[in-house]
Length: 224
Image (cartoon, rainbow, N blue to C red):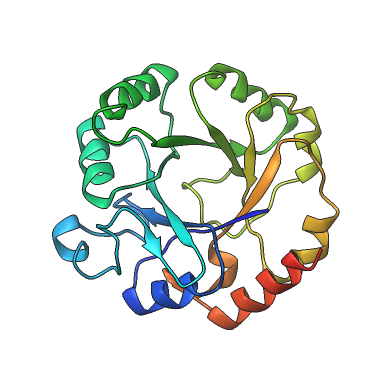
């Protein structure tokens, strides 16, 4: 199971999370988010190894995910290049045409192995059907709770509606996952379910993850 920790911002907290055996780190480039990574000029030299090809630990290389919401394509491309991002996570109303244009610009000349995650906000079974518009355009979905903002709401949706997802694109499960959800995740099964996205349920404050809670949760998840 892939474990993605999103909303990272502070250098020392990032270093601590890197040592927990996570697979992906999410950096939010959306100015209205309380977890916003403010600017390349401010953070490129501060966030450990963010400008290198990989964030490396003693045991693994952690992939970097840049989170964007209806951002100008050139801004996305600039951030992807400067941070050597492995994934772009698009959390707004980005169209398949927008996504295709991004990919054509980045692949193969700038970031040949870049992958694209499309986040879909889920409230009802009907919302699942939106995946069909992105078939053949994205590498992964992230199913999140439908709310007024864009992620980080701390609220969960009814995971049973994902039984209606019959696509072949793998997905991450997001939306209000907390330290108490280990058994709930163990009981969730779907052929395209490949990982979980952790954010506000493991924070002491926006952008600051509780290392003890994360460590215990990850250890329990990996025991299954």
